[in-house]
Length: 83
Image (cartoon, rainbow, N blue to C red; front, side):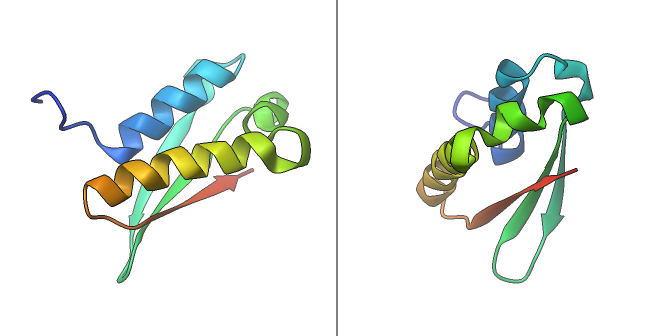
């Protein structure tokens, strides 16, 4: 994979794994849609609070980061944090 070819999925995995206590439990499932791609993020139940944050702040930051990356690559993405 060439420099700059990292996927939104890899970016989300990287961010999530660095936030949680159980990085091996982090998974991201890519669900292609008509208008946009949905990334489903799953983490260990104990780590839900770490990826959502107080009042959803961390989840919002993650979404902002991945969306801005997606825009640069001309894609639309939404992130679902699935329990």
